[in-house]
Amino acid sequence: MTTTLTAPSVDVGAARRAVYLAFIGCGFAMASWATRIPQVRDGLGLTPSRLGLVLLAIAAGSIVSLVLAGHIVARFGSRGTVTVMAGLLLVALSAVGIGYPYGIAPVVVGLFLFGFANGAWDVAMNVQGAVVEGRLGKSIMPRFHAGYSVGTVAGALVGAGAVALHVSVTVHLICSAVLIGVLVMLAVRDFGPDDVHPPTADEGSGLRRTLATWREPRTLLIGLFVLAFAFAEGAGIDWISVAVIDGYGAAATIGSLAFATFLTAMTLGRWFGPALLDRYGRVVVVRVLAVLSLAGLMLFVFGPNTATAFAGALLWGIGASLGFPVGMSAAADDPARAPARVSVVASIGYCAFLGGPPLIGFLGDHVTVLKALCAVAVLLAVATAAAGALRPPARP
Image (cartoon, rainbow, N blue to C red; front, top):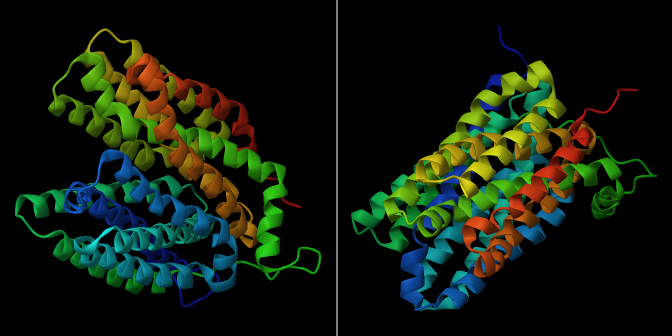
C-alpha cells in the first residue's frame, strides 16, 4: 500500500528517495571540486593566501544565496529550486574546469556560481526533507544528512581515482557536473509539494517576509544552536588531521585516519540517531550528544597518545552528528514558513563554516592547533543552553 503526500499522484517513498539523491549529489559535487583544488592551485600558480582569497568566492556565493533562498524556495518551490540550481551547478563546475587554464577570473566566477547554487539547493532540499519527515511521522532528517556524507566520500574516491589515472581537471569536473546535474534534475521530479501557504497581508510577501523571519526569537535561537554544532563539526573536518600530526607527532597517514574516524562517526550518528530522536525527543538527545562531543573533544586534546586521540575523535564525531540536521527539522516545524526559517537558520549556521577555520588557525598560531580546539567547548556549551528552542511549538 502506497503512502501519499498531499498530492495523490506523488508517493512519500519516491519523495524520500529523491531527497536522498539530492543530498548525495550535493555532497558528491563538493567533494569533486575539493579533490582538484591542488591541481587548480598549481595550474594558476597560487600562493596559500591567494588560494584562500579565491576560495572565498564559494563563501560569497553561498551567503548571497542563503539570504535569498527563503524567498526563492517560497516562490518556486523546493522542486523548482533544486532543478534550477542543479543546472546552475553544472554550468559552474564546467566553467571552473574549462576556465582555470586561462586565469583566475573564470575560476572565481565559476566558484561564486557554485556557492550560490549550493546555498539555495541546501535550503530547498532541507525544506523538502522536512516535508517528507512530517509525512512519515518520524525523524529522518539526520539520515538525509548522512546521505550528504556518503556523497562526499564517493566524490572523494572518484576524485582520487581521477588524480591517480591522470584524468585532467577539465574532463573530471565536466563529467562530474553533467552526472550530478542530470541525475538530480531527473530525481527531484518526485519531490512532493512544500505545503507553503501564500503570505497574508500582515506578513507581506517575497523578500520582505523572509527578512521579517530574522526577528523571530525561536528561529534565531535555533540558528545559534546550529551555528554552535556547525562549528564543532567544521573544526573537526578542517583541523583533526593537522592536530594529530602536529600535536602528537604522528605521520600524515595517521592524521588522515583520524579524520576518517571522525567522518565515519558522524555518518553513523546520523544514520542511527533518528531512533533516539523518536524515542526521547530532540532536546534530551542533542543535549546528551553535546556532552558526549565535549568529552570526546577533551579526550582528543588532552589525551596522552594517538590512541586516545582516535577515541576522542570517535566520540566527538558521534556527539556532533545530529546538531545541524535536527536544527533544520526544528526550523521547518511549520511547513508554511519553512523556506524562510530554514534559510535564516542555514545562514547563521554557515557562519561557523566560514569563520571557524580562520579562528582556529589564529588561535593555533599562539597556543598550537591542538589546544586551539578547546574553543569548540565554548560553542558546545552554547548549544546545550539553546537546545530548548528545538522543542516543537504547541499546535493551536
